[in-house]
Image (cartoon, rainbow, N blue to C red; front, side, top):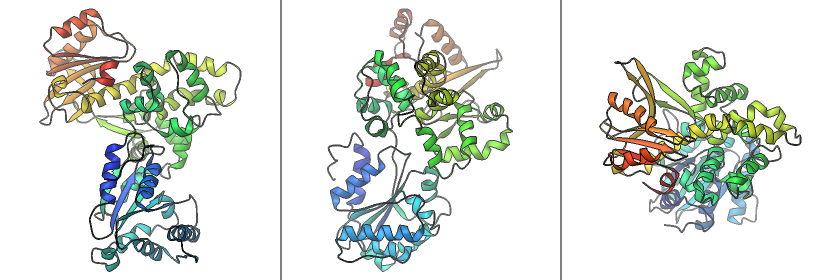
Length: 484
């Protein structure tokens, strides 16, 4: 395996998979696809693998006509080869064959980054690549390149290999580069105070570029510095983070009606997480927003999670914390935040941090963190087995005709209910919370009861957990970030 660059944080698994594919002994050309939301480090990783192996990297430019894109690619190939003359590709068939010819004796990566930009004026390009990589085509069999197509439009890149798409079945490598999880994000930001790490994650999530590029390593020094950090580096109109969410919407070619998509996201951020609830909030029929919800899902901004207790219901959640923060906190006060007035941003944040932030940002993101911990970090002993899915839902008690919201429900591979969980970011959890969870467990028995808190636990509950023989598990911030 190729040594990972010293300046690349984490990404051991992703780098290992990429380097194994690039250096594989396969004696023909191979196709790969990489995607992921913007700012996750895709370009950084691809440039690094090309530097380490002597590969070829080309980053496409947005809104460039076909002939100009071919000219730019020809120039890049000429520079790569050290050609004394000018290399010109008349069409994309020539260009792809030119890329296939870059190496006949050893495997090297050949990267076309921002691939969706190239197809803007060349819709036929995926089909051209399909034919260029035909199984028995001599140039494909002679070539040793690893042609890697990369892009940030998740809907577009996912569609390259799906259904009846020309490239379906052609790729030998496919990777979606994820955001850092909350543990890795804390290390990346250098935050050892677990409460501060959680607060920062509630806003910027696990997107590496937000620290390295957008904020130029501006990190809150302590809990006492957190409010100033939000005011000066998130809510300030001179900060790159200020307009980031609007740019994310504008940059995705699938999101053409950005106003309506933004309104849908705002409705979800406010707590309307069902199709009907979202439609009611924006005063539309549920059928009118089906397409918009699907587009936001395809773009990776929304996820629809099924209710494990009610098969006909699902809940929408925003995937990126900054998108949630923007629509809950910034969007309602946008005009006031855009025009700086002494003390006004501080007053807006002071009010929002007491009510909107805890309920619409911190609470939902913390619940998601706890579900991720249960699925990926907790031991089988903690959960009562190996979970195959961890969701939230509503349990209906027919004997009392009451519905009980469940923050966390972990199921085993056979469908058995392993654990039920209660999650509170700002509340000290006590016996009352346990009693509520026990009511749910009386209807849907589970092996474990998990109680998560960002504020701690009452002594009586801690004693009950110790005496439960492991049935009651308490998970505070230290255990969430370091334990299992």
